[in-house]
Amino acid sequence: MDRNKQDIRYEDLYNRLLDRGMALHENNKKRIRAGLVLLGVFTVLMILIRMITNSDRVVFMILWVVGMFVISIYLISVEYIDDSIRKTLEEVSDREADFGELIPDSEQVRERVQSRIQVKQEEIQARYMDHRRNKAPESEDEE
Image 1 (tube, rainbow, N blue to C red):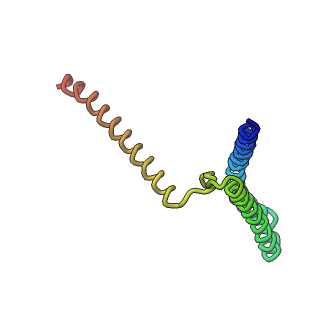
Image 2: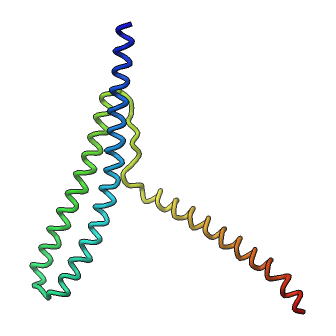
Image 3: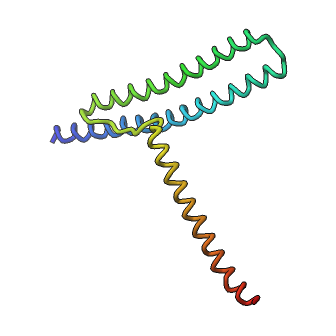
């Protein structure tokens, strides 16, 4: 009986650990997205500052490169933390922790985009055909 309680306790502990790991993984996805947006916003901001102030190009480029390195280090650290959590959960449970991925493959993105384009094309084609069908009886009445 005591062994059964201990097994239940460990299973509960593992489930809580897994839930926290999954929550952290979801937060890491948001952090990655925010970091990538920050890269774009930072670039645009630096270009605007350069145009407004007419500052020295060398100083401006050094600041820009340093800023990009800081953002890149942030993104790498988020990925490292996510990977270390996945590995820790795998070691603890002797199971493979399936978090999914932080950033999808370019092939997966391409497939998603192509499937969405195909769905939109089919919707547009259906609307066009409906419009033609609805318009056809009116043109016969006009003759």
